[in-house]
Image (tube, rainbow, N blue to C red; front, side, top):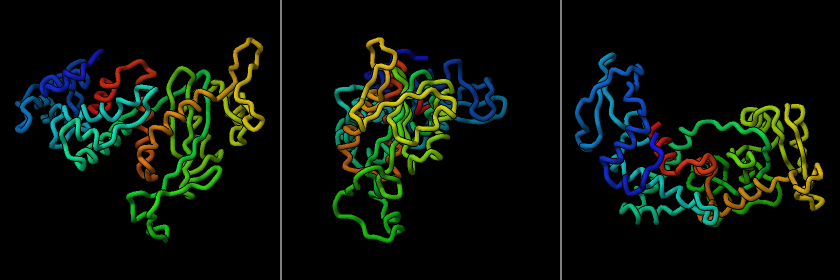
Length: 321
């Protein structure tokens, strides 16, 4: 494992591939097909001389440094892809600046056209989210919901399927809680105090929808903190301790055990929602089809920081996994 990766290192294509090999095969190159270790070098890629080719002596399978990764099959140099992913997430790492660089800004930094960067960022978000392992939370965990407006921006087929014309102005959400069908989908959040977060766009926040996700994500025996929304009433029956605050009465934190510390609250997740809202705001609306990818990328960067890992190394690990 590479402990520290300097950004300037990745400006050199040869060093960039060296970092990728160290992260992908820390114990030596392994065949991608039979998992055998009898692998020998087999020349270099015709276009990228620093990309090493390999041959498995056991099954005769041929592959290279990028085979089977998100970065395979694209014409831009690998250093451009890595730096692009870093620019997408760099501002999320600073709690004082929670907004994503626009495609125009990234294009300017990398010397590319905006259409190429648009395609690149979509591939990177999809690839990183797909390679992100499941997160298990434990200890003190907070639950809450956030509702955002998300229609079918950029997806005329979905608009026609609803039997209406496309909107000329930005979609306005109705008051109160929404659903995916009403184009105001809920984002359900679970955050471990001092630890990682899991956020998911859901069709609704009914008990039948959230309980399977909770049981998959939160270890039994954990103490869960929520508001008094009725969907959380059955959490003790699922094997969790449950403490609530009543926002309707103006209660946002409570000292349950008299030690002078207000441990019953959902303020950690409320603060996280503030960061997420400010990060989504410059996009001026996202479609239901793309919102899960943006949420997954935001979660990935936040959790990388919470684990104390360098953002650049975490991104490369995900891209070459």
